Length: 522
Image 1 (cartoon, rainbow, N blue to C red):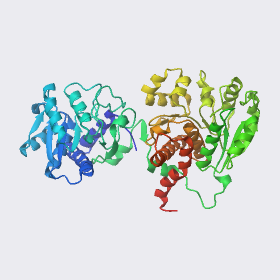
Image 2 (tube, rainbow, N blue to C red; image 1 turned 90 degrees about the vertical axis):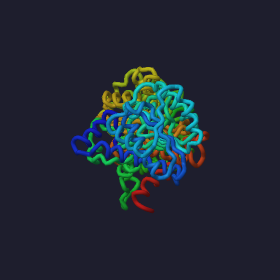
Image 3 (cartoon, one colour; image 1 turned 45 degrees about the vertical axis):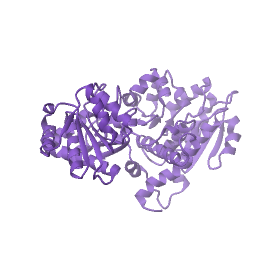
Image 4 (tube, rainbow, N blue to C red; image 1 turned 180 degrees about the vertical axis):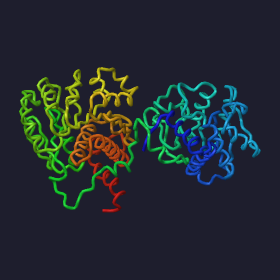
């Protein structure tokens, strides 16, 4: 599903109205009806239920007035609190204000701090709040009296349905610079906006509903840059079905080069992630001193010992053996638990430009490139890098706070500069390709912030690559399935004690959920 900026959405609205003749009032009516459907889901029978509709002076407020009319017609007791004087309302919003007033219904202007006590009083007996104060054009911080109204809404504890976007949230960045509505549900129109699917905005959205308001579908499908929210439907279509004649050799072979003394767990989690992804054969290559250790841990994965250093890390001389092993494998996953030993760093830097199979580079594989990330440009095969914000900061030589504040721009710039698919881990993981396509993940939870979680993801992406997905789709599907497995594990076991092994165990059920919806029952 495509994700857009506020300006892109306004252009789609303009095209629908001017090029296709769909009146703005029709779009506004459809938007309001979509919100009403969600309010009904929350309240059930609307008769006698009190709903407070907070409306701004723009089209977002006009949508709110449509909501108020339909809720009133359904028997609800509706109070419209207008954050403007009625004479300030223009355009299609003014038409809906006039209809509301002709129905004999009052509006209650909120134009100064003195009106906030009345707002708090209205909220006391309210069953549901509709937030239609600010729309996608909002930037910066809300000023009074809107700031006080937003704080009162949040303090009320009432369920809030936000119209298009929670008020106080920037549509393009997801940034929150002042008071911002914390919605239980957000009904956005036609397409999700970038701010709704990126933190910190995503934490204010609640359950996101994307509503059809009659904009022609082919208008919604085009446009550049191509940014997409990863959905279950997309992943289902990407995953290759297994033919009846499949065997282990036809389902992809993954070589995992990982581990060092004290870090064998990371190597094992990566190898098992590749196996759980569906790769037919997985081989884990570790420093020779660790082979017996990982062989005991793993029964479904083959193990190989490589030349090591005295410290139990991979030696620079392991390069030739790794390249030899890759002649019998389809994909390389490298990095988890490798250490930052100088010989291992040299090995990684010399190995990557010599690769002839696709690769996934993570953790210490990326740390080895700190200060010389241009080595990535010398990789001649499809490659995926999977840094978290700290690793990305080291690769780019920027402070972590800059990465955090510009996540989308950073991942897109890095993918273009390095020529590799770049996955930036974190809440709403981002995947960007050198061709300019960016995917935003919609799954995952804070419980997944645990050691080893990223190692499982590395193996998962490598396993999907080995089964024939291209690099960008393997990374995007891997992020989605990884997050879905984490969500399923959190529902069953809670977030606080979630372990990487729990995510690993839930990968098969997560993939079964996606594939069963395509295939019916097995």
